[in-house]
Structures are given as structure tokens and as C-alpha cells.
Length: 358
Ligand SMILES: NC(=O)c1ccc[n+]([C@@H]2O[C@H](COP(=O)([O-])OP(=O)(O)OC[C@H]3O[C@@H](n4cnc5c(N)ncnc54)[C@H](OP(=O)(O)O)[C@@H]3O)[C@@H](O)[C@H]2O)c1
Image (cartoon, rainbow, N blue to C red; front, side, top):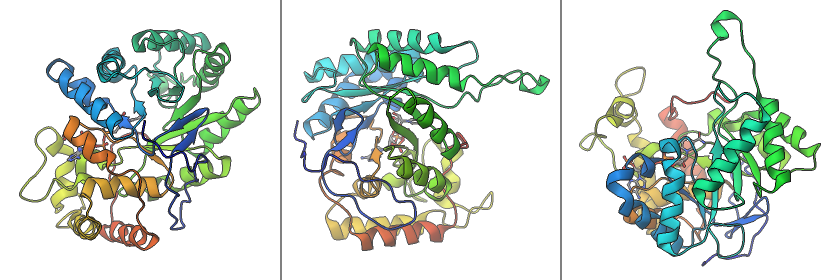
């Protein structure tokens, strides 16, 4: 593992101020993780054809100093967890919590047919089995208990607290070394933090959509996480590929991505300005050229510089290696400010169509 252990305390994301975080590994609960992790969502979906690509992405990430991988039971119905275990073995790295081991984060999906706290414990055991470990380094609740099929009939029963109880049991039983949440807004992050604190359990992280193109919408969440000293893990740090800089009017995303992404790239419809995100892309390209870095590296480094932990997805070794080049350096405050000004000027954010944070 080539990780500088110079700054073990993760600097907190300051929502409004332009600050850059110190270079070095991050504390995430009991784990010491690299500045960036690898997201596996897209690898799982291509499992059959791309097992070698998955192994390559993980191997290249580890070779570049990454020791953190994010997966979920919901990705490919368990395939992503199995694939992660398989790829880790291929890369010759053991999944675990110790130095030199791969710190894998996975997630519990709160779905209506899961009734109570024991559902979390059972799911955690199943995830541990698929990952081939006795203890999961970081176990997260994937989203608040929002799927309420009978809501229209006035029958809503939010089981969030029961799931938090289950998360606490996983921690206390040693099934999970650390516990976290995803897609929690300021209210819920404060509530789960207090619930766990009453049991003496730290909330290790909150994983949210956070990037240069999705900051305004999460300001209150970032501020609450900073106040509670809860590290933020950023998913979609590349805004699903937009901030990799590969798309412009001549290189539009392919179907089905085109359906949701075209408006961001070229604009001119649905209230998006003509030219879409092009002015922001130009600023990214300008800074990347001046720095001798690539556009995806600058975009990912933006998140790192703000003190959050990005988990960019990569389809193969080439992308993974390139993305990990976002570690070990920092944008200057002036560059961060210029990027934020350019992002503000385009007048829209990248919405994944996902969760509204509560
Ligand atoms: N907690 C949650 O609710 C939640 C939700 C979503 C995602 N996640 C996690 O966050 C991770 C990251 O999200 P994501 O992968 O969907 O989005 P992302 O990291 O913003 O974007 C990844 C995509 O960007 C493109 N890309 C990546 N590196 C590139 C490079 N070096 N050059 C050119 N293009 C590059 C690829 O697009 P193509 O695929 O088009 O090739 C890749 O699939 C996921 O893997 C998952 O672990 C969590």
C-alpha cells in the first residue's frame, strides 16, 4: 500500500468556504483509507463480459495506492459483492480492516419486505459471506426507508429506527467494524448520529451524491456532517461521466445515457441553457492543462480538496489508474474558487434523478 499516513484526521467539508484539505490518508471510523476509493456499480452490471475488466480496475486502483472499494448487495443482486471478492483475490489483496488490507464498504437495502432490525443483521451476514469475510469493514444503510408502496392508502410505516437498531447490532456483534449511512440529509444524519451515539457507536460516514456539479443541493447536508464530524463519501464524483470531460456536442453519450445526459452536455431544452455545461468543461480543461493533469483527475481532486472521499466508478484498469491520479496533490484555493464560480455560472446542477435528502 502506498499511502501517506500524514494526515489521519479527515478535514471536514466546509460547505461554503473555499478550503483545501491536507494531503494524506483519511480516517473513516477505525479504518485508514486512501484519499479516493473505487466504485463498483458499473462493473457489476457488466459482470459476464467484464470480469477481467473488473479485476483490472481493482488491481490498477490498488497499485495506485487505493485501499477502499464501495459495493452494495443491491448492485447486480449480490454479484457486485462476489465480483469484488473475486477481483480482490485476483489482485492478491485480502479484504479486511488492517494495514495492507482492502477496506470494502457495502450496503443494506431498506426494502418493504424487510420488517425489522434482524433483517439488517441477516443481510449483513449474507453480504459478509459473499465478500468472504467475517467482519465487513464498513456497513452502510443504502437510503432512508423511502419505499412505501401503501403510502397512497395512508399506510406508511417508516422503519428507519428499526434499521438503525439492526446496524447497531451488526457493530456490537462484530459483523461490521464500522457503520454508516447513505443518502441521508441533515435531519436524518443528525437522528442516526444521536441514535448510535446513545449506544456508544460512532457514525463512520454519510455517502451522498457530491461533485463539482452537485454542491448547492447538498450544502445543508455537508454542513451538518461537518458539525457532527461525520466524514462524507462522495458518489457520482464525475457526475456519472460528465466531469470526465469526454462529452461535448460532437461526442454525446451513447444510449441509454444519452436520454438523461444530453441536456447537460448541449442544453437548449428543458430549461437548460444552450451549450449546457461547456463553460464549466472549458474551465476544467484550462486548469487540467495548467496542472499537467487530466480532466477526470481535476474533477475528482475537487472532491478530495473539499475534504470528502470520492469513489469514482471505472470500467477498466485504464480508467481506474487515471482516476487514482487524483490522489496525492491538491488544487489551490484559487483553482477551487475558479471551478466553483464556473459551476455556478452554468446555472444548473447534475441531478441523478435520485434521492431528495431529508
Ligand atoms: N449510495 C448510493 O446511493 C450510490 C448511488 C450511485 C453510486 N454509488 C457509488 O458511487 C460509485 C460512483 O458512481 P458512478 O460510477 O455511477 O459515477 P461516477 O463515478 O460519477 O462516473 C463513473 C463513470 O464515469 C466515466 N469515467 C470514469 N472514469 C473515467 C475516465 N478516467 N475517463 C473517462 N471516463 C471515465 C465512466 O462512464 P461510462 O460508464 O459511460 O464509461 C464511468 O462509469 C458507484 O460505483 C457506486 O459504488 C452509490
